[in-house]
Image (cartoon, rainbow, N blue to C red; front, side, top):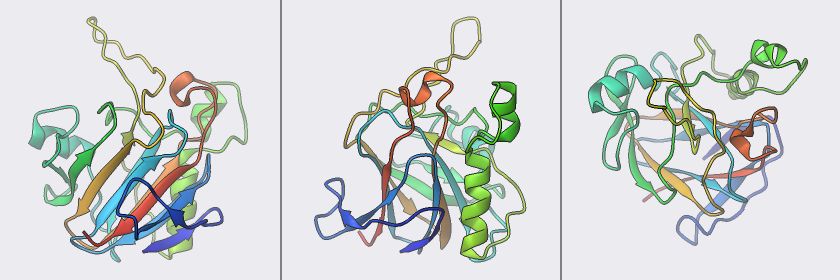
Length: 216
């Protein structure tokens, strides 16, 4: 069920979920919130390909727990879970589970959400960013934002080189690629179509993405 947004929702049929499920467009460089009840599926899908999505998940309505990348890495022993494995909260309990991934499987849980200082350091001011998209989406949903968690950067390509250094490379996700999660609790999901256009991660420019919340 769609929540509040920073843009205008444009329902349409998504080819990435069941034909009867209407997807909502998250416009390029903006964020949107969605409520998913326990057991519902959350599909995040590419429209044009090559777009990074910052995903944040909070318990709803309290928002006193959130998806924690660091706790998830410890539990899974991997940089990113495999299909069938859960993402854990900051209290080490499952909050969502990855159930399907039709993309090349390239995602990230190391890089912080972009914020105003990130763009100032890159030489830009007043640039849209994922941290502010999160804050706006939470405020419009009527939920207090107490902390900005490490996001799950869906479709983000961050190769780790042999010397331990990181590369910020273009996303290899193609049109129609999707990730599907199952809500293990009632959750508020915030999706930010990453506004980064000063580095190559979004293949040159931010793009719209699709989100659908539905009963399996």
